[in-house]
Image (cartoon, rainbow, N blue to C red; front, side, top):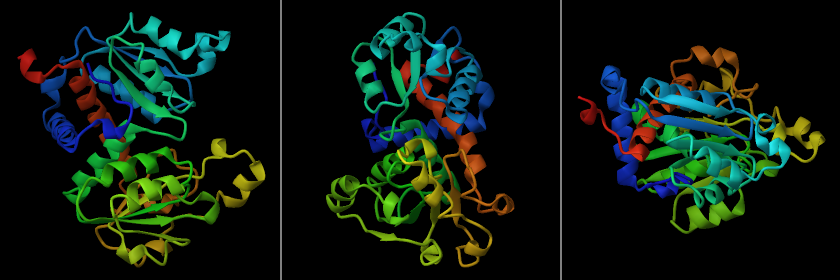
Length: 309
């Protein structure tokens, strides 16, 4: 039995297999309509979510399975003081696979130790968000045709952004990846990632304070929002939230085949006028997330379309 807690739990070969399977699902949706018939997914979301939770639910339903769960801690027995460990052990008796989001880092890992069914980390604090990472990898591969020889600019909240941290670790395993980190000093990438990933693996990177100075270099621009919930001081949030906004003017010097990504939700860090630019990939990115989660659910449950023919 496998769990997915960290994107590094998967080898490059396993990731490639998942992406290949997701691609096939897009091409042959009808072939996968009943592969999870009579299977149940529990979505245990102790932290609010729209895209991730609904994406998981849509993924399971399109595979012919059923869904149960809750969308916030207030609607679960956690509001009565029940531990996460107890909650997941009980729910594992009702479902075949669990997707869990929790504000506390390490909570899905702790839960996995008590489980007899696979669990997928759907985000734990500022730590990991592995299915978003798989979504990002799928988007890059489909839009650029490869996962190597790329210059990736990451812009916005690089300190608390779990999607940024996860994607950096995942992309560090591919050849000739150059990272450009674009953020205010207060939200720069944590030193431990610089040391443990960039310096340890001798990966090219640089830190800058404006996207304009590096825009012509970028193959990928990964935008993130400045997350209010990650700040202890509201004054700091207000001061920094509008620091990095992508608009049409900033794209004048960008490559014609630039891929603009965002894990969503967007606040105002990307102008809505950019949505009509053919380089804007963030809504396609959200859709790809459903297909890669379908592939992951199938893989962890050990089911295939061939068995259902």
